[in-house]
Image 1 (cartoon, rainbow, N blue to C red):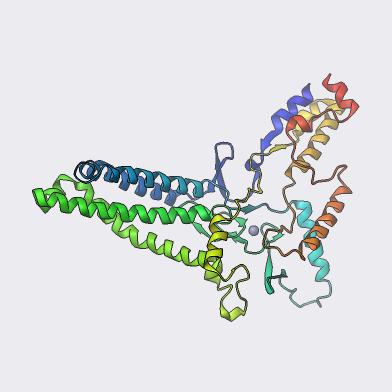
Image 2 (cartoon, rainbow, N blue to C red):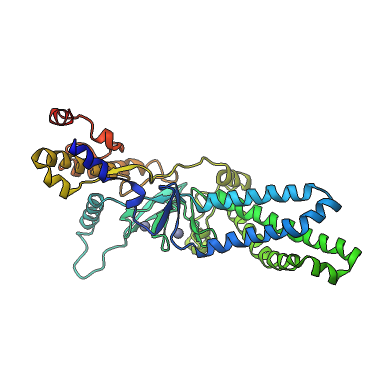
Amino acid sequence: MSAVMISKKAASRRWEKLPGKNTFCCDGRVMMARQKGVFYLTLFLIVGTCALFFAFECPYLALHLSPAIPVFAILLFLFVMAMLLRTSFSDPGVLPRALPEEATFIEMEIEAANANVPAGQRPPPRIRNVQINSQIVKLKYCYTCKIFRPPRASHCSICDNCVDRFDHHCPWVGNCVGKRNYRYFYLFTLSLSLLTIYIFAFDIVHVVLRSVDSGFVNTLKETPGTVLEVLVCFFTLWSVVGLTGFHTYLISLNQTTNEDIKGSWSGKNRVQNPYSHKNIIKNCCEVLCGPAYPSVLDRRGLMVEELPTSASLDGPTASSSSSKNSIAAAQSTKTTAPLIPNEHTPEDVKPGIAASLEKSHTSEEERMPTPLNTPCKSPTQDRGPSSPKEKVQKL
Ligand SMILES: [Zn+2]
Ligand SMILES: [Zn+2]
């Protein structure tokens, strides 16, 4: 009975132990970067400008032009907010770091490969070359996450995570933009451009219509919010529309901002973009309508940890069960391997990756009674009556 209480106390969600500079809300369902100041500014600007529009312009425009104007504005505003929150509150495609055993194994593998380097000479850079669509792509080793990054992944210095198909870190949305939230980010910039143009245009229409009746100066006095809205929209318009245009260009080439800045596929490297279909429609379809990728973090998965103080008080029977707990913890913390293939990893490289994983598991299995790639179990499953001793203890 006491052993069951130990496992209950020690159970925690994986998001609580994840490395990296992220914050989590709603028991791990919401994930963001730690720096969120600019995100609150984005929220304030959008909600504030729309609130002024609904308060000052919409009643007049609905009466004198059409009631459809505020209705369409509300729909557009809701869509913008939905896309913003979907981008900000989701996992952008964070790749889990290697476990200590995996990191040790890959370090040993690299050291063995560098054994032939003469003393005094610098070892070669930690790079693996793979061929994708007859182009050579380099997989770089991440010294923080201890993994060879899959193609198109990069390490975000602000979130301190490797992100798959990393685009950029956007402080305005308070999150990285990567494989899992790029399309929502693009839809956010696109819809925000439309909303800004919409509000700006109807602000002007409103001022013109009112000026005919009561004069320009009186109109500005009657609706002071209009001036503020026009100013905010005017300055936002250029940056947001420009950003949308830039991302439309990137999507048409199936390229990320990170690749564009680094010039990964520019002529100087003599490497063509291997991910481009050389067709704008196909590229747009792949980026915007491709499959939705699940998160590989399993943020809400349960971990069971050992509580040494309680275990020592319960005598030898409990300590045997706590050692089982530590094995279960090792099983449940298993999230990934040092080499993580993604859909860009060529088929001929995947067997090599699988072989290195097998080697890694074998070295761990020597110490562990069960394979590490067992799926995560709930504490109750972990505490299942696997041995007769435990059955007796539960009874
Ligand atoms: Zn990394
Ligand atoms: Zn980031």
